[in-house]
Image 1 (cartoon, rainbow, N blue to C red):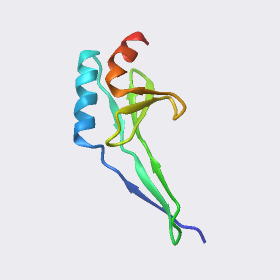
Image 2: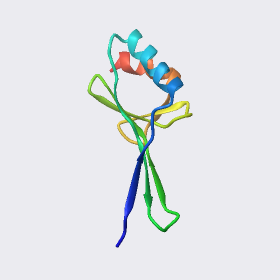
Image 3: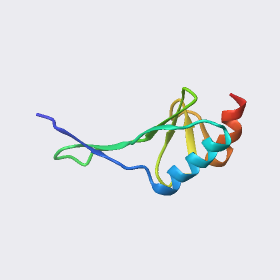
Image 4: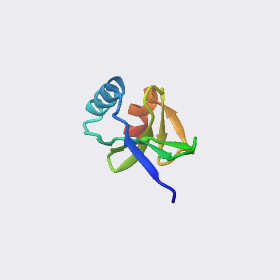
Length: 90
């Protein structure tokens, strides 16, 4: 039987701080769901699930220690420094 082990990853403090500052400038509050690591027991297969961030009903995905943030899915990414302009434009 295959057993998948899920371990929650806490959002890194500097990422959380940057998101809160950006959202303050956009007059909104982010809703954050922590990502996780999913491991298939007794194998070397691992999947890192990104943090899910909801800002004004839009989904953004982020990984700890990354300068990029993904819009809706992993197919479109923008720099975290461009997030404020992106939120204001949408």
